[in-house]
Length: 237
Image (cartoon, rainbow, N blue to C red):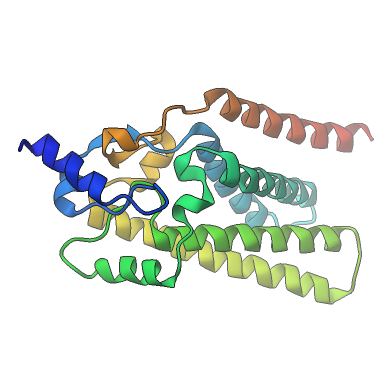
C-alpha cells in the first residue's frame, strides 16, 4: 500500500461518528497537505473581534473616546450575533457541531499535549472550542452590560459588572492566545497565519469547498458602513 493510500485509510478510519474528521496522528499530519479550512467570514469575524476588543479595552477609561468605545462594543455584539448564526449554517469547521466537545474530549486533547504525539485536529481543537464558546458568552455579557451602563439603566453595580466581565474576557483571551502559541509549536504549524490565509494542514478530502468570499466582503462593507453611520450621526447631529 502506498503512503498516500495509507494516509487516506488512516484519516477515514478516524472520522467521528457525526461525520466530522477526527484527530490525526503525527505521521498522518506530516503527510498532509495545506487545505482550505477557514472560510472568509470566519476570518473576518476573528480579526474584527481582535481589533474591536483591543480598541474597546484601550478606550474604556477615556471620556474623549467614549463614542469609539461604544461603537466598538456595538460592533462586537453584531459580530457575535453573526457568528452564532454562522455556527449553525456555516461551513464545516465554522459550525459548533464540529468543535464543541465534552469534558472527556477536552481532557484527552490536553493530556495528549504532554505526550510524544499531540492530538491534531483539522479545525478547532476541543480546548480551543471551549475557549471560543466562553469568549462568545462573555462578549454578549460585556456588551449587554455596557449598553445598560451607556443608557443609564442602573447604579454602579452595572458598571462593576461590566468591568468585571471585561476583565474575565481579557483573561480568557490571554489563555486562548497562550493555547494557540503552544499548539503552534507542538504541531509545527502557524495557527495565527492560518486565520489570515484560511489554510491548514489536512487531508484533501477534508477541505471546505468554498471560501464564501462575497459574504466576507459584505461583512467588511457592513462594518465600514456602521462605523461611518456612527461617525456622521455624531458629527451632524
